[in-house]
Image 1 (cartoon, one colour):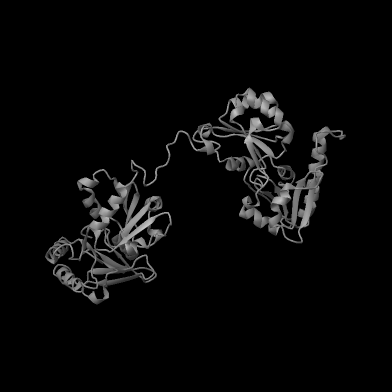
Image 2: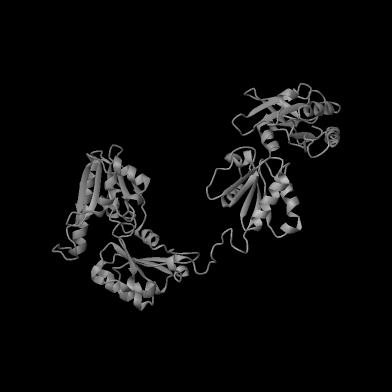
Length: 513
């Protein structure tokens, strides 16, 4: 059990060598630690410390853990293993003294601390006594694959990681039974590893990577490397066989990616519902379509709700040119572009989906794919803020008479009122239409009681959101503008107040209630 007054032990992975590949967490811990410990050979130069150097601060205690030998020859009675075990035990005692004194200790480790890392020997000796955390790092294998630009494994392929210190016949056997492989700890083992690669028939696939991600890195086909030039910090890599045939690692089995100008078109039109306001109201499906698009088409204020991406071209238009906007989108798609036509709320509710599909049914666009992605409607957004006024049968209608005569609007209002449906009323007013709300209220009052609940939702989800619960008899048409949506209750819709005093509007699912 750890002593709460003792310091903390951190095993910190530094990645393959580039100081910029040190994780944010590792950099923070290095800068905060009381004690920095690192291994080195007898010459005293530590690769780990050099990688961590940008993150060290003045005044830190440094514990250099210097290996007592550089080859597996020693006068120690226990041989090499006995000598190295004594060395690690001594290092653990030195670090424990700091931990017992309440100092936090960071042990630096190239690559990942628990992937052939020197830190693990401290971990085994100290982690059961002190509060300990291991911070993973980018492994040398990942670094080597990155600088080669060749995938390690794909799909169901198997990656085998081997130490070069294994017997040659074991290495050859393992290489013959795997798809991809990384062989570490080369140095003096290089000639044996090269022979094992040849025996397994994999030598021509193998790459040599030395000091990956550093300024001194070296890459070469392994068969061309001079064994006398190989340091310990190098590895052999057999990348994914799927990608072996193509320079740069591109998959030989995958077709080249088409561009918008490529003949044979991958173009399509996706009509995307943005919901009533910002990103929180946007579905993941809609986000994906927007991210994948080459061209964005839509009414200017709606396009402004999509974050700009310089890869994409944007085509804002006026709100009254729906057919022209749809044709433009379809023409772009016919030329091979992925086009997103954006629409507020749900594109199928008084919005762009029907306009796009109407034009798409023209013979010239017969082969252009069109998809419609739903969005959260304004009616549902307002209803959610009020409670559940759409809990039973309801109808949705628009008060605008721009695309249909007012006589049709009035007839539908009366029919919905007679049928005792809750009404969700879109486009109740605009700068040029100021009388329809009063006219609709009067038509509804012919069939509904003045006490019928009415919800006025303005800019729901936006910065100026407001919700008003009133009655049909007290509805003030002057308080309704183009940013509003009205919900008019049925005979069963109720308004209640709960513990916080705020009104809750709901329509019971039973009828009559």
